[in-house]
Length: 513
Length: 88
Image (cartoon, rainbow over all chains, first blue to last red; front, side, top):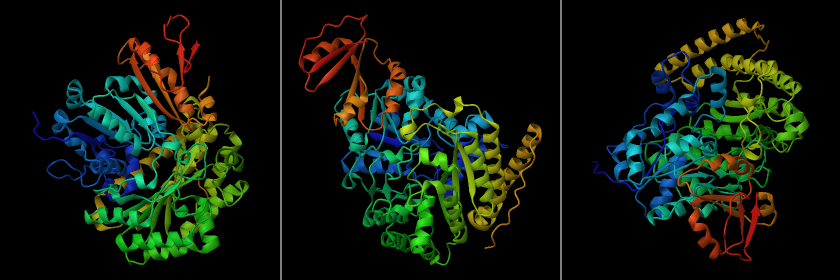
């Protein structure tokens, strides 16, 4: 019998409880099944074990768990984030097991796409299942342990009722957790029954003063600078939430928590970093400069989570702001580039108008393909390396839309970037729509997908060698990933031959840099 | 009756409670999925309780409620202004 005791364990499976070697983008490999190598090696690349203290407390943990931990500690509860390899020792005495995940069952993009293409279950879902099948959890359930699950993929439990039941999950919480988490915990401590499911609507999200400051380091120094997004894209769940800008002093406080615990790089998290401090969609150059100066003062390397392509174009054309921000970023003399995730979603202005009419603002939706190309050019010139997403199978998508998307990818060939096609998953206001996986994969989808593949292979080696894994310490990873790329190249060509497809050789010259 | 009825009445929260004689049976979620996924505006709480607690709960209703029940299942509940019964 364990003697160590924590009332509330906060945890998740290994694919989430990892800093991915300090390279956030490698975490995306956890959304795929092992390809061309054993699962253990794939997992080592995508999600190596997190360093812990002797109590199993991880050095870095997912930001959402850190927020919840801070909230519970601030309210006097005995709670801690525990590495998944160490939860067994605490389960016999715990009252609540709280879980969070980005993609519990690999139903979100890009996991769902990997799954459909390879017909193999991605490692994130495998790893989560292994975690939930632990004997220690089953035993603790018999002794009254309550399991509460949440996070951005909480909705997936609605499709997995058998596992919801089998694993004895008491409550599923969909939405921002600050308000509801305390209510649920109080119920457990008061021996009151828990609800089965809670959806936190936009009017019940916490205000800034209800959002706690993290007390321990987050993965790769992720720090939230905003919540919500005003662009209103129909496929996105974030846009349903009220927009809140986190004050600079709170951002700095959290960055300092990370730095004081040895996490010296930071990732500024927002659905659109360039909208920080904005009035609606009108950029606020002053707030953005202050934000980046603050980050520069405290961090060794700065990264952005997401930015919109329209804001990138707007920022540079109106204020030369991208150049100014990159001057600040590079001013420490060691940082040479900045990574970010951007959404192209479609190359069709017609479809863009239907599903994301505000994504192009302040520019008209009719010029969406040009906005994308201009933003890619600006990023290339400023050493911003985007990992771009496309959505396939959107409701009302036509073959012509896909042809336009394929043409846009060809135009983006000269710009250093990765482009990842993702299958439509019903989130946001489209979340009651049919799944893409019910839809037939058409020849046009295949054309878009293989264009993305060759575009990304074309640039991946350059990115790895010159930017992402260019330090001597990254050599083993660099070798493994290059071997993986060779394998993908070979496999891609084999499949193309099998399908009788002409190899894509888009004539494009990289812009010299 | 649609959730949008509540949304248009500026109700921001709704509680769906399933009275069930099989404790722990969550198969009703299957039928609820579409409704839950369709909703983006309201805060929703889904609960379940033993069927024998229905009468007592109706008696002490504090808020407006709608009782949806099968027409093949006879339910005896006290009548109150706060309760609307819909047979399906």
